[in-house]
Length: 211
Figure (cartoon, rainbow, N blue to C red):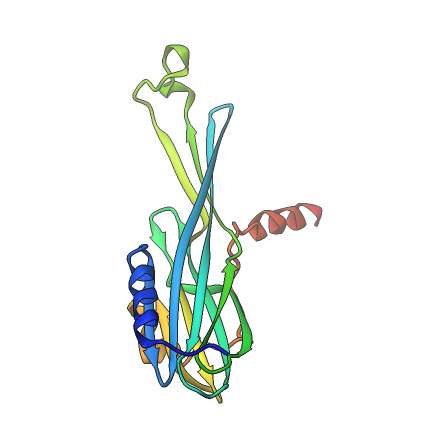
């Protein structure tokens, strides 16, 4: 049998928060700790006078949920990942592109951990340089170039804990997303946005050629 030690628990929390990217919330008998780690990879390709840069980004959340009470309630843990569509210099409002949930029955004075990784978001930057702008060796000679951007970029996460359908703890790396009106719109069955470059316009052009 494990005897709950308040001083030991406090020490654990202090060590965790010094690791960086960690947020801790305590509400109604539950302690929520979230550590986020971002991952970003990029790939550059050159074909003719076109330079394409593809960035793939994701996020890993390491979540800890502790029950300091002597009871054994069932909690619903929910996580949401947000991205923004990018088109040249314009960016859309953040939208949920990946989400999930899991239930935990946590014995009194115990803690559980859970890790989740978001689906990758992809952003593509294409730069087309005119032949006149190329000097010797393929280097720029002061001509014109056109840059276009498509796809999405990672924005933020939100983690919620519910008990009997009520949100009792929440964490995010965005203060805006934690506003009550934004939290009220989140649920595990909501639809998600596309996080990859849209190819619909290309397909549309092919259909028109067939007619």
